[in-house]
Image (cartoon, rainbow, N blue to C red; front, top):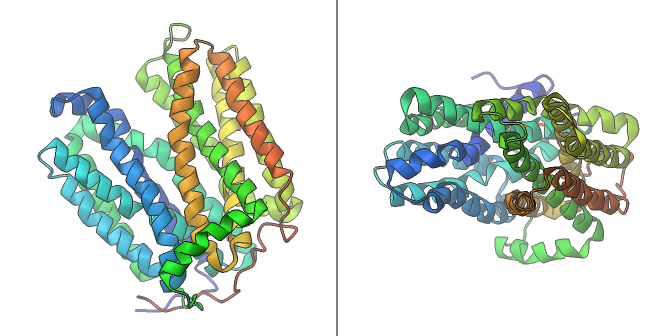
Length: 409
């Protein structure tokens, strides 16, 4: 097979990472629209049905803490290949599962395997891409992960109506098979110097991450990003379905889908950072997200709420790759562990968002609820004032500037 030219294929490699992120993380969200259907199909309660999603999420969080130290020691691509290949098998098995307990077990297994992609792909891009292309690549990967929150729900809703819920997982399994082939054939192997310490020592060294104050501030900002994103969509769905607006489920799903427009800004974060500096873009993105949330609370019409939601999502999409880039920069030789822990923090935010949103909904003051989420981001903005990047732009992450290798696993 003709070897890849590292001078020409960064765009294609970025596209593969974007696609894999979108497809893999969609698994986290495909069961959300199916809760009611599962209660009937398996004759279970709604609380039991929610475990079909929670089993995936909880094991995904555990997995985020596992893979970083192993990839620091053994490399990145090998884990990307193995995780997507195993995910293909488990996802196809779900399409044949006959009972509820089997579905829970396989969803948990699916979650712990899927957790390898996000943290490792971020570090892979940081190590393998040249400085001037790095944050753009991180932005595309972030876009794929963010878009999965909408794409997964739309995909499962459509396929379930046409072919039934088993077909959702058989089709996802097929997509993962294609993805694994793309990763094996076209992602260059990361032949970079690796840590000589044992994996166990790498796990013990994770506690050293908390000694870096700037990393702690970034972790806190990361927590607020997904907390407010998931919380906003939870609030928005309840608000738009309330008697004040009375939108149908399909109309609300359309409103959610429009948010993808804001996510499209994420790949351009690298350009913004090169021109205006990392810290400015970090704080500017947070300000944009805060404005969007305030707008949601003040909007007198659905159209203005949709526009405000896009503004909010755009701010989140700008900040996410910047935080990943800074973590890669500050994490040093333990950047894999740092990014993995950051992914765990993202999950905590994702899990806390609905809890906070449900509490705010119970107050009956939707407009005040959006402003409360805005206040959470204001605190995150305050934390950003203590962050100082080592370079004027986020694209200069301090990693080995090794060229992309042409070796195929």
